[in-house]
Amino acid sequence: MKLTKRTLMAGTAALALTLGHGAPAQAEFPERPVEMTILFGSTAQTIGQLLSELMSEHLPERVVPVQRTGGGGSVGYQYVDGTAPDGYNIVWNSNSISTTYHSGALDFDHTAFTPIAKISTEVTAIAVNANSGWESLSEMAEAIKAEGRPLRIGASGRGSFTHLATEAVLEAIGLADDAIHVPYDAGRAPVELLAGRLDAALQWPGQFVSHHEAGDLRILCVTSDERISMLPDVPTCHESGAEGVSMVMWRGLAAPAGTPEDRILILEEAARLATESERFHEAARTIGFEVTFADHAEFGEQIASDDAMLEELMTALGLKE
Image 1 (cartoon, rainbow, N blue to C red):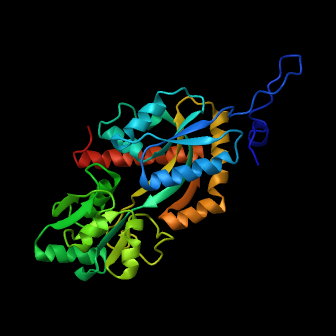
Image 2 (image 1 turned 60 degrees about the horizontal axis):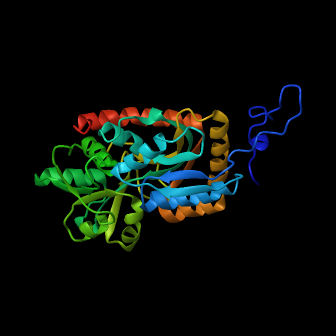
Image 3 (image 1 turned 120 degrees about the horizontal axis):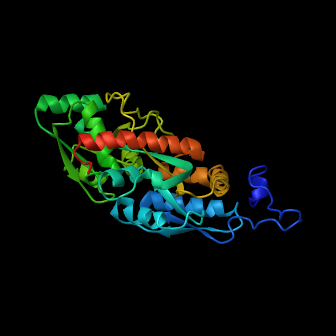
């Protein structure tokens, strides 16, 4: 079913009538394709492309995904920020709006955009070589302290989400000052662990699952509040000794600030219907993300809350410009 202003906005987006005369209704939004800027490759690209395809099934015009990568998301954010606030340019955004801003890569923060909807959540996980003998995060911390050596732990580049999540976990288990960070290229975490060049690595669980199931690597914990459907038997890091840790990567949609509310609501509804489809849930099971739809108001509250948390963490780590 294609969404129209009548079906979506009854009472909110009324038919436009010329005063005193019955005139044709205003054209439906969108009248032309909507561009969805995708900031990253890998999982972000895969989910974003599927989302745009599914949203297109519920709108008068297509949602077209366009890759605008680079600068930790800053290239895409700058592009969308420079477009008209008319609903025809939206961004597949994430916590990166805060990390890029607080690191000095952007000269505007999350308030430059109006939230449309939260779509999904991705949770990082900590894994070790199964030969280490470590069964839990707290066991790993105790062993490293007893050996009196630094923990060699890998994550993506400095200031990335995986780096920040790593720092939060290390602080919680008392190893913040006793760790050596080893950055690596995308997809290299399992290789580095299996080769013994790392003691531990924090990355998206999809990189570890097959090795975990084969018994070569052991996933110690995930960084969310609750266990995830992909790894129901793996505890949260909070359960495993890193009390209070809650670090998740959300993804959602936003438009330039000032975009009319009726258009935000039309896009929000199309996104909601997309996330309810079996195709989207099957992708979540296959790729390894959680479908966590939230409307524009709730999404806006989470963005603001996470921004404050990330600003505090990056300031403490000396990463805030």
